[in-house]
Length: 243
Length: 210
Image (cartoon, rainbow over all chains, first blue to last red; front, top):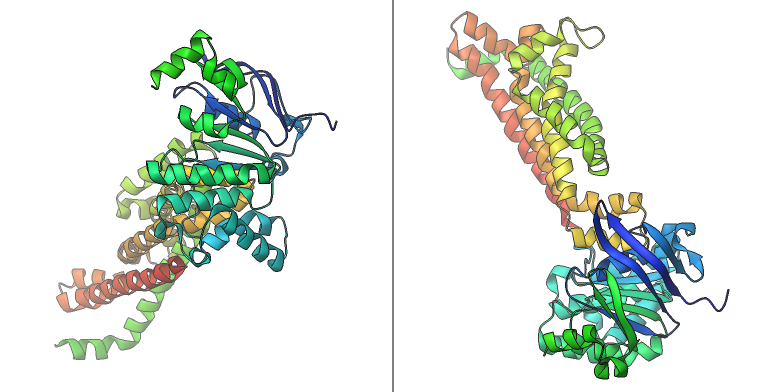
């Protein structure tokens, strides 16, 4: 089983009634690799992420995480192995930053010393000063909130990370800054990351491989250099639409 | 007869009726909260039941309170002349604001917060206890305040079916055209409503400060 990739989808279709949100989706995310899914809104990118952490169940096809079908996992255990970051962050407004970050480790039964050490380590990783720990999410800037969101997702050191347009709501300067920082910690984290964005520049900056989705299908997938030069009509159409 | 003399004359009765009144409302609100808060939570888990439960609670609210007290008298177990029917009617009245506010309070939690909690691997019970209920607490408390203040007023009618309370003075006053006696029931009831509102407001502040 050691050869199984952290995340693999095989022929995955998801539909609600007659609406097919994801059709025959197959790809994998390898260890230490960042795969970026790009595509227009409604292309099925977010649905793909939700199928992986079992907040949605595929209508047909297989989603396997670490070689095991998501339907065979205990969903709670599965989700705790997969960090999740979303555009709206979703920090708990009634918890301090420290409590937000340490929630999953404390539910996992870590002792206070280990949680404290981990929290400090994470603050360093995401570039936040220690004085934010006692603050509430409402007292932070957008960039700080998103950094806390990333720290929270990394808290229990999950081997996989799903990121749904995590930097989409930030101003361009903060965004570029947080992208640079992400790039700096990416190699060091060594996690299998599936990243969703509609920002092509971001995709090319952060992704080892790029997948292009359109109307629920994965119409192209390959390395980022191939993506830049690909003559595939879907790829060139998407590239041009953003130029 | 001035107010002081009136109060002095009726003092023992005034104290007894006030206690009865407090007791009626207190028991009714406790029962309504014990049933209504879990019912409101359940509604958020079973969205299809929403229409039925809120519909029922809404309908009860439209029944004139005097009629509702009357309807309950012939019923077995909860019915009869006296405090049991009165408490039953007060519970029914208090249910709507409590159920509705619990439901909307939880529904108002930012979907991104709930999505993040779920995706992080929190169980439904953990999401409810650590995220949804604390964030819904101010709305739930507001429902309890409305239910209590309304309950203090509606409970004055309980005197009509022999349940006692401050309404006693009001009806005796009405029958004997004695406005002093009416005020002897109405003023303490109003003060009780204000006091309950203030007290629950303080409790709400304390609960939501953290």
